[in-house]
Length: 446
Image 1 (cartoon, rainbow, N blue to C red):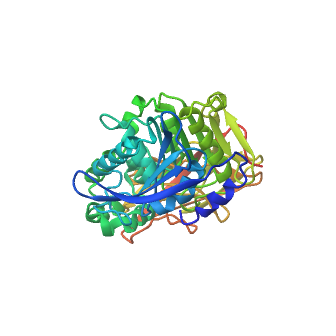
Image 2 (image 1 turned 90 degrees about the vertical axis):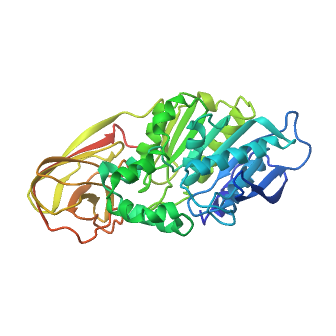
Image 3 (image 1 turned 120 degrees about the horizontal axis):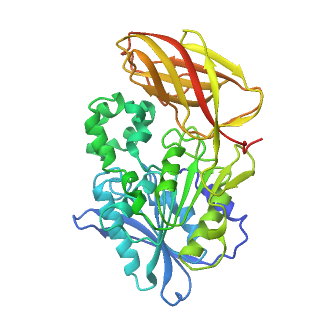
């Protein structure tokens, strides 16, 4: 989010007319007395009949309303009233950070009511745009009892099932989880108290209860609000399953774009930010302004190539096929065969490995690499027998001649910090392993 000025620069490439606007800042007191800082952006001139359509923009973890300036500029300059506010426990707002919990949703609803209560703003045509933490707030705001009545939403690199994202197969993505906690623990006693359990995958019933109360997945079938989901090809925090699951479950108009951005090892904004914003503006123009621009008739799922401007669109989640890759031997590091055709991963791949002996080995991590590049990874709490490791769902291009390599161990390898080790393992003995690699039937990248 530190580089959002790139968003503003990208907008200069977009030829749609823009209008002047003003900005004012203020503070809203919540029902419990917590002050919430906000910036309100409004177009210059008289509001149209019924008021300006509105958009609430929600920042990411550890950020503030100031991070949303370029996004707000993009929307207000095209005829929207935009409200950016700083979440509880962030920046100059008061209170404690609850990681999109009940108090955060209550604040979101209060700020929605504030925006639609302004005489120059429509009281019905209001949408929301949120990234990461902010995206989680949007989904939770839509799906909690008496959901916030947004008319259209856009979520960026976020989660719908927090537990499966950060504790897949009951093993923490410890490096990711630690980074999240450290970014916010100073103003989140709740997260600080759970740090050790969250990172070390202990007391998981408590962790799951925390995550489930901040997840929307089970309730997404009730969502009819038009939703555009933007998710990154390679995002260690929230892989593509988080957005794909939402796309499959929501019942209203929906689009999914998988692009060149994300949490580490990617970054936001990516080189395709111009395309993202063009799509986002078209979405709001259609569903908030009622403009018949045809976005509702385009193919709803699009995947960007790894580099460049090539994209492929589909009528739904694209079809895939499974490529079997054998890793013979018993060592912890093994090579697979060379691919004779280009491939592009998509979907959840499975790695089956025979565990022959385990002595105090809390986590078995598998890192699948191609040369120096990590392709995917996953982990289990191992036990003797044939074990299946579900690998993270990243979209990765594998050109012809790619030679896959797998490394097993107590932590991720090849410079990958997703799964940290803690030196608490003793020994493990493994047998053969086989990877069922899920790939697109036709690669997008070249």
